[in-house]
Length: 264
Image 1 (cartoon, rainbow, N blue to C red):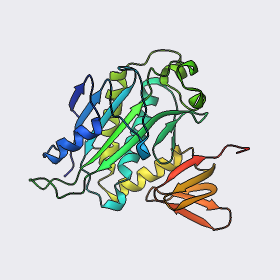
Image 2 (tube, rainbow, N blue to C red; image 1 turned 180 degrees about the horizontal axis):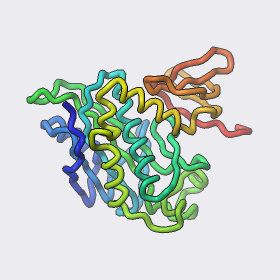
Image 3 (cartoon, rainbow, N blue to C red; image 1 turned 180 degrees about the vertical axis):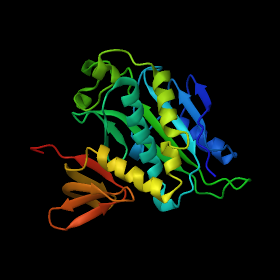
Protein backbone atom coordinates (compact mmCIF):
# COMPACT_ATOMS: atom_id res chain seq x y z
CA UNK A 1 0.00 0.00 0.00
CA UNK A 2 1.35 3.40 -0.96
CA UNK A 3 1.77 5.95 1.82
CA UNK A 4 1.39 9.60 0.90
CA UNK A 5 2.41 11.57 3.99
CA UNK A 6 5.31 13.67 2.72
CA UNK A 7 6.67 14.65 6.10
CA UNK A 8 10.27 13.39 5.85
CA UNK A 9 11.71 16.61 4.39
CA UNK A 10 15.50 16.70 3.98
CA UNK A 11 17.05 20.10 3.27
CA UNK A 12 20.34 20.90 1.55
CA UNK A 13 22.12 24.21 1.09
CA UNK A 14 23.73 22.76 -2.04
CA UNK A 15 23.52 19.39 -3.76
CA UNK A 16 24.26 18.08 -7.22
CA UNK A 17 20.70 16.86 -7.84
CA UNK A 18 17.76 16.24 -5.52
CA UNK A 19 16.51 13.62 -7.99
CA UNK A 20 19.84 11.80 -7.88
CA UNK A 21 19.85 11.88 -4.08
CA UNK A 22 16.37 10.36 -3.79
CA UNK A 23 17.08 7.68 -6.39
CA UNK A 24 20.07 6.62 -4.30
CA UNK A 25 17.93 6.63 -1.16
CA UNK A 26 15.25 4.60 -2.93
CA UNK A 27 17.78 1.97 -3.97
CA UNK A 28 18.78 1.72 -0.32
CA UNK A 29 15.16 1.00 0.64
CA UNK A 30 13.70 4.42 1.48
CA UNK A 31 9.88 4.40 1.49
CA UNK A 32 7.53 6.65 -0.41
CA UNK A 33 7.21 10.12 1.05
CA UNK A 34 10.83 11.24 1.39
CA UNK A 35 11.32 14.81 0.14
CA UNK A 36 14.58 16.54 -0.80
CA UNK A 37 14.75 20.34 -0.97
CA UNK A 38 17.79 22.36 -2.01
CA UNK A 39 18.71 26.03 -2.05
CA UNK A 40 21.00 25.30 -5.00
CA UNK A 41 21.63 22.40 -7.37
CA UNK A 42 24.99 22.11 -9.09
CA UNK A 43 23.76 19.56 -11.63
CA UNK A 44 20.05 20.28 -11.86
CA UNK A 45 18.53 19.42 -15.20
CA UNK A 46 15.30 19.17 -17.10
CA UNK A 47 14.02 16.97 -19.88
CA UNK A 48 16.47 16.06 -22.63
CA UNK A 49 19.38 16.99 -20.34
CA UNK A 50 18.65 20.73 -20.43
CA UNK A 51 20.18 22.76 -17.60
CA UNK A 52 18.72 25.72 -15.69
CA UNK A 53 20.73 27.88 -13.30
CA UNK A 54 19.28 30.28 -10.72
CA UNK A 55 20.91 32.13 -7.81
CA UNK A 56 21.05 30.03 -4.59
CA UNK A 57 17.96 30.42 -2.43
CA UNK A 58 15.88 32.10 -5.13
CA UNK A 59 13.61 29.31 -6.31
CA UNK A 60 11.89 26.17 -5.02
CA UNK A 61 13.92 23.08 -5.98
CA UNK A 62 12.29 19.94 -4.63
CA UNK A 63 12.03 16.23 -5.41
CA UNK A 64 9.65 13.66 -3.97
CA UNK A 65 10.00 9.89 -3.75
CA UNK A 66 6.94 7.98 -4.93
CA UNK A 67 6.34 4.24 -5.05
CA UNK A 68 3.04 4.05 -6.93
CA UNK A 69 1.45 0.75 -7.83
CA UNK A 70 1.78 1.38 -11.57
CA UNK A 71 2.86 -0.52 -14.63
CA UNK A 72 5.65 0.93 -16.76
CA UNK A 73 3.14 2.34 -19.28
CA UNK A 74 1.45 4.47 -16.61
CA UNK A 75 4.45 5.78 -14.73
CA UNK A 76 4.47 9.04 -16.70
CA UNK A 77 1.35 9.98 -14.70
CA UNK A 78 3.61 10.60 -11.70
CA UNK A 79 4.77 13.71 -13.59
CA UNK A 80 1.13 14.68 -14.13
CA UNK A 81 0.33 14.26 -10.43
CA UNK A 82 3.16 16.56 -9.33
CA UNK A 83 2.49 19.12 -12.07
CA UNK A 84 -1.19 19.36 -11.11
CA UNK A 85 -0.34 19.54 -7.40
CA UNK A 86 1.98 22.45 -8.21
CA UNK A 87 -0.75 24.23 -10.18
CA UNK A 88 -3.03 23.77 -7.16
CA UNK A 89 -0.35 24.96 -4.71
CA UNK A 90 0.48 28.11 -6.67
CA UNK A 91 -3.22 28.97 -6.85
CA UNK A 92 -3.62 28.30 -3.12
CA UNK A 93 -0.70 30.49 -2.08
CA UNK A 94 -0.70 33.32 -4.62
CA UNK A 95 -4.02 33.20 -6.47
CA UNK A 96 -2.10 32.86 -9.75
CA UNK A 97 -3.65 30.56 -12.34
CA UNK A 98 -1.16 28.44 -14.27
CA UNK A 99 -1.51 25.95 -17.09
CA UNK A 100 0.36 22.76 -17.97
CA UNK A 101 2.26 22.74 -21.23
CA UNK A 102 2.25 19.03 -22.09
CA UNK A 103 3.93 17.05 -20.75
CA UNK A 104 5.88 18.71 -17.95
CA UNK A 105 6.04 22.51 -17.89
CA UNK A 106 3.94 25.02 -15.96
CA UNK A 107 3.27 28.25 -17.85
CA UNK A 108 1.41 31.50 -17.30
CA UNK A 109 -1.30 32.94 -19.52
CA UNK A 110 1.30 34.26 -21.97
CA UNK A 111 2.98 30.87 -22.29
CA UNK A 112 6.01 31.86 -20.24
CA UNK A 113 7.58 28.99 -18.33
CA UNK A 114 7.37 29.15 -14.55
CA UNK A 115 8.27 25.56 -13.61
CA UNK A 116 9.50 22.31 -15.04
CA UNK A 117 8.92 18.76 -13.83
CA UNK A 118 11.26 15.80 -14.33
CA UNK A 119 10.44 12.20 -13.35
CA UNK A 120 13.04 9.46 -13.18
CA UNK A 121 12.28 5.79 -12.54
CA UNK A 122 14.24 2.80 -11.36
CA UNK A 123 12.66 -0.42 -12.56
CA UNK A 124 15.35 -2.64 -11.03
CA UNK A 125 14.12 -5.31 -8.60
CA UNK A 126 12.45 -3.76 -5.55
CA UNK A 127 14.31 -3.47 -2.29
CA UNK A 128 13.76 -5.91 0.55
CA UNK A 129 10.31 -5.58 2.06
CA UNK A 130 8.39 -5.77 -1.19
CA UNK A 131 8.49 -2.05 -1.97
CA UNK A 132 7.17 -0.99 -5.37
CA UNK A 133 9.74 0.37 -7.83
CA UNK A 134 10.44 4.05 -7.17
CA UNK A 135 9.61 7.10 -9.24
CA UNK A 136 11.40 10.28 -8.21
CA UNK A 137 9.74 13.47 -9.41
CA UNK A 138 11.59 16.76 -9.23
CA UNK A 139 10.17 20.22 -9.82
CA UNK A 140 11.84 23.58 -10.04
CA UNK A 141 9.54 26.56 -9.53
CA UNK A 142 10.74 30.06 -10.40
CA UNK A 143 9.80 31.84 -7.18
CA UNK A 144 12.05 34.92 -6.95
CA UNK A 145 14.24 34.55 -10.05
CA UNK A 146 14.09 35.91 -12.64
CA UNK A 147 13.13 39.13 -10.89
CA UNK A 148 12.67 40.91 -14.21
CA UNK A 149 13.25 40.34 -17.91
CA UNK A 150 16.64 42.02 -17.47
CA UNK A 151 17.81 38.98 -15.47
CA UNK A 152 17.36 36.69 -18.45
CA UNK A 153 19.56 36.04 -21.45
CA UNK A 154 18.03 37.57 -24.60
CA UNK A 155 16.78 34.24 -25.95
CA UNK A 156 14.65 33.65 -22.82
CA UNK A 157 13.03 37.09 -22.56
CA UNK A 158 9.30 36.54 -22.95
CA UNK A 159 9.74 32.79 -22.45
CA UNK A 160 10.41 32.53 -18.68
CA UNK A 161 8.78 34.16 -15.67
CA UNK A 162 8.73 33.95 -11.86
CA UNK A 163 6.04 34.23 -9.21
CA UNK A 164 7.63 37.49 -8.08
CA UNK A 165 7.29 38.90 -11.60
CA UNK A 166 3.67 37.76 -11.87
CA UNK A 167 2.54 39.02 -8.47
CA UNK A 168 4.87 41.95 -7.95
CA UNK A 169 5.72 40.79 -4.42
CA UNK A 170 7.88 38.18 -2.67
CA UNK A 171 6.55 34.63 -2.25
CA UNK A 172 7.78 32.47 0.62
CA UNK A 173 9.32 29.23 -0.65
CA UNK A 174 8.42 27.25 2.48
CA UNK A 175 4.78 28.32 2.24
CA UNK A 176 4.69 27.13 -1.35
CA UNK A 177 6.43 23.87 -0.42
CA UNK A 178 3.92 23.19 2.36
CA UNK A 179 1.03 23.78 -0.04
CA UNK A 180 2.60 21.50 -2.68
CA UNK A 181 3.11 18.62 -0.25
CA UNK A 182 -0.41 19.06 1.11
CA UNK A 183 -1.84 18.82 -2.41
CA UNK A 184 0.24 15.69 -3.07
CA UNK A 185 -0.34 13.88 0.22
CA UNK A 186 -3.31 12.54 2.08
CA UNK A 187 -6.09 10.18 1.03
CA UNK A 188 -7.43 12.64 -1.55
CA UNK A 189 -4.05 13.92 -2.73
CA UNK A 190 -2.69 13.76 -6.25
CA UNK A 191 -0.24 11.00 -5.31
CA UNK A 192 -2.99 8.78 -3.95
CA UNK A 193 -4.83 9.07 -7.28
CA UNK A 194 -1.99 7.16 -8.95
CA UNK A 195 -2.98 3.98 -7.12
CA UNK A 196 -6.39 3.38 -8.74
CA UNK A 197 -7.74 3.27 -12.28
CA UNK A 198 -10.39 5.82 -11.33
CA UNK A 199 -7.76 8.12 -9.83
CA UNK A 200 -5.53 7.89 -12.90
CA UNK A 201 -8.46 8.69 -15.17
CA UNK A 202 -9.19 11.69 -12.96
CA UNK A 203 -5.60 12.90 -13.32
CA UNK A 204 -5.93 12.69 -17.11
CA UNK A 205 -9.21 14.65 -17.03
CA UNK A 206 -7.67 17.33 -14.81
CA UNK A 207 -4.65 17.48 -17.10
CA UNK A 208 -6.95 18.09 -20.07
CA UNK A 209 -8.69 20.90 -18.19
CA UNK A 210 -5.37 22.53 -17.24
CA UNK A 211 -3.47 21.93 -20.49
CA UNK A 212 -2.47 24.94 -22.57
CA UNK A 213 -1.22 22.68 -25.36
CA UNK A 214 -4.69 21.47 -26.37
CA UNK A 215 -6.06 23.66 -29.14
CA UNK A 216 -2.58 24.88 -30.04
CA UNK A 217 -0.55 24.41 -33.20
CA UNK A 218 2.43 22.24 -32.26
CA UNK A 219 5.56 20.64 -33.61
CA UNK A 220 6.39 17.26 -32.11
CA UNK A 221 10.04 16.27 -32.18
CA UNK A 222 10.65 12.52 -31.91
CA UNK A 223 13.81 10.43 -32.06
CA UNK A 224 13.06 9.49 -35.68
CA UNK A 225 11.78 12.84 -36.97
CA UNK A 226 9.22 15.60 -36.45
CA UNK A 227 5.67 16.38 -37.46
CA UNK A 228 3.25 19.28 -37.05
CA UNK A 229 -0.43 19.54 -36.34
CA UNK A 230 -2.99 20.81 -33.87
CA UNK A 231 -3.21 19.31 -30.38
CA UNK A 232 -6.83 18.22 -29.95
CA UNK A 233 -7.01 16.40 -26.63
CA UNK A 234 -5.59 14.18 -23.93
CA UNK A 235 -6.26 10.44 -23.85
CA UNK A 236 -7.53 8.69 -20.68
CA UNK A 237 -3.92 7.53 -20.25
CA UNK A 238 -2.60 11.09 -20.26
CA UNK A 239 -1.12 11.04 -23.78
CA UNK A 240 -1.41 13.94 -26.24
CA UNK A 241 -3.62 13.71 -29.34
CA UNK A 242 -2.43 15.66 -32.38
CA UNK A 243 -4.39 16.07 -35.61
CA UNK A 244 -1.63 16.13 -38.23
CA UNK A 245 -1.62 17.89 -41.58
CA UNK A 246 -2.05 14.72 -43.60
CA UNK A 247 -1.53 11.68 -41.45
CA UNK A 248 -4.69 11.67 -39.37
CA UNK A 249 -4.62 11.92 -35.59
CA UNK A 250 -1.52 10.68 -33.83
CA UNK A 251 -1.11 9.79 -30.16
CA UNK A 252 2.06 11.20 -28.63
CA UNK A 253 3.28 9.09 -25.73
CA UNK A 254 6.62 10.87 -25.36
CA UNK A 255 8.31 13.62 -27.29
CA UNK A 256 9.41 17.23 -27.24
CA UNK A 257 6.36 19.39 -27.99
CA UNK A 258 6.90 22.94 -29.24
CA UNK A 259 4.04 25.44 -29.41
CA UNK A 260 4.27 26.95 -32.88
CA UNK A 261 3.62 30.67 -32.85
CA UNK A 262 1.79 32.39 -35.72
CA UNK A 263 4.24 33.27 -38.44
CA UNK A 264 6.60 30.46 -37.39
